[in-house]
Length: 266
Ligand SMILES: Nc1ncnc2c1ncn2[C@@H]1O[C@H](COP(=O)(O)OP(=O)(O)O)[C@@H](O)[C@H]1O
Ligand SMILES: [Mg+2]
Image 1 (cartoon, helix red, strand yellow):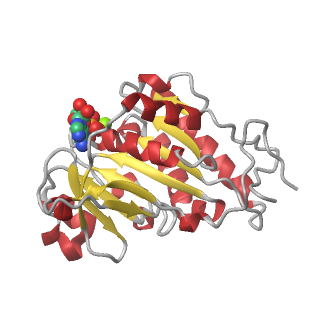
Image 2 (cartoon, helix red, strand yellow):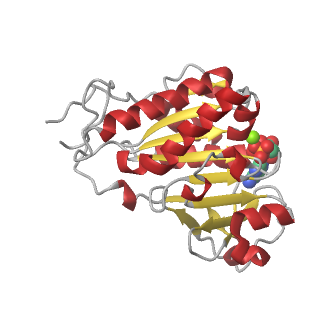
Image 3 (cartoon, helix red, strand yellow):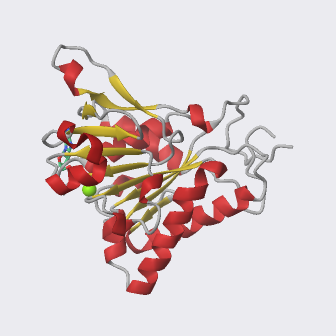
C-alpha cells in the first residue's frame, strides 16, 4: 500500500536512488577546447558529498545549483539547513528550510526520518537530500557536549542513511576529520573549490594531491572515491529567479508524516 500526501506527485515506480545522477558544473579541461561537458555526481553511489573551500570560493553559490538540480526531480525531497542564515532569504518560510539556530532541529528531523525508514528496510522511499551550509560553523557555535552529540548524529547519518534513501550534501570550509566524528571516510564525493592549501590537498586526496591544482572562485576539483580528480568549473546561473522558484517548490514538498509510511511505490 502506498500512503501519499495530497501534494505528493503520483509517480511511476523508479529505480533505486543509487542510479540518481546530478550534473554539477562542467569539466574545466574540456572547456579549454570549447567542449561543455557536465560533470556528473552520483549522490548515493558512493553516498554523500562535501563541498569545501575557503570563504568566498563559491560554496554557497554551487550549493544553490546543487539544490536546483535535486529539485528538478519531483520525487526528491530536500531538508535544507543554512547555519549562517543570510544567503538564502528567498527560502524563509519554506517548510523544510531551517536557518541559524534552528539547523539543529533539521539534523534531529533527518535522524528521526532515517530511524523510521530503517524500521522497514524492505520498502522503497522518496530520495531525501539533507543539505547543510556551514556544518563546521554550526559545530563551532556549540558547547563541547552539544558538539559531540551533533557529530554523533552526523556519523550515524553518514554511515547508515544510504540504506534509508537519504544522502547528505555538506558545505564547509575545511574537511578535517574533527568535523565528522568517526565517519569522514563515508563521504563519497568531495568538491573542493578555490585555492587549496597543501594540507587541504593531503586531506582531500593524498594519493593524487599533485592533481589538485590551484584554482579561483567557482573553480575546483571533484574527487570521487577511487577515481582520478576531475577539474570542474561552476558556471554562472542564467535565470536565478527560476532556479529559486524550483528550489522553493521542492523545500515545500510534504515529507509524509513520520508516523505514516513514507513509501514510494508500495
Ligand atoms: N561560479 C560562480 N560564478 C559567478 N559568481 C560566483 C561563482 N561562485 C561564487 N560567485 C560569487 O562569489 C561570491 C562568493 O561566493 P559564495 O558562494 O558566497 O562563497 P562561499 O560560500 O564559499 O563563502 C558571491 O557573491 C557569489 O555570488
Ligand atoms: Mg557560504
